[in-house]
Image (cartoon, rainbow, N blue to C red; front, side, top):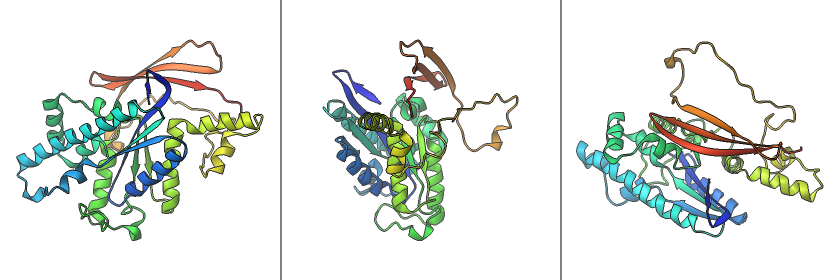
Amino acid sequence: MTLDPEKKDNTVYRLVLTGGPCSGKTTGQARLCTFFENLGWKVYRVPEAATVLLNGGVRFPDLTPNEAEKFQENLLKTMMAMEETYFSLASTCNRNCLVICDRGTMDAAAFIPKEVWEKMLSLNGWNAVQLRDNRYNQVVHLITAANGAEEFYNVEDNNCRTEGLDLARERDLRAAEAWVGHPYIDVIDNSTDFDTKLRRLIASVCTRIGLLQDWLATISQLNNGKSSLVSVCRRIGIDTGDRLATNSHKLKFLVSKLAPDDMFPPFQDFEVVHDYLVTSNPKVQARLRKRGQNGKTVTCIFQNQSLNH
């Protein structure tokens, strides 16, 4: 989350919506846009760069391997240029801004061989930490209807999509794996009906931004502290499980020996350093977190405040 130095209360939140074919990205964008605009936010929607270029007459079967490789590189550059245009506009806005990116930089890695991706990074001076971790505040992966809602799967609404069920599932998985390592990624599956799926999408973004906590503070003041975060979540249809229970605790385990890597799904290794800061308020915890890999790091500051439920 970025703050304009001249407008300390102006938030710019950069969100990536990704997923497989027929996952609800387009409708999800529209719902998010309406929801946040009703809260008084400005919402920018970055179009999918691949769709823009493919609608210009590009056909992958017509490209040589070298042409396809160069096209993917230019596609990524186009995507980043489009994003920077909207990021710049958001940074000067006098309102809180949500920038929704229809796919993001790491989606490009899902559709090309690993060696081509590594070559592309090297030639352009890019690295995964820069493109994945430091560019976006949150990534939400919407799972394709081909996985769990097959009866609703179709590609008729997008002329650039021709995938059958099996290919759609494969591309969905590859897109999800490309974002493994981002510190704030949420996966929205098809375990509910589509309307509830979209509400879960909105809830995940609100939770990450911290809007639920803000609403709690406001409602508690209006009701002399009688409203709780749990009641607010229930009212807007968010299932908190036991995460907000008064007796809930975060548990950490020291494991003597890990199983072999091939026992786990795809993952990324990071080096993480936490520096806890002294605060004047005993109910406030502040810390710096440095997180990185291969010598490239991202440093963030976090502040947690205890709330009386």
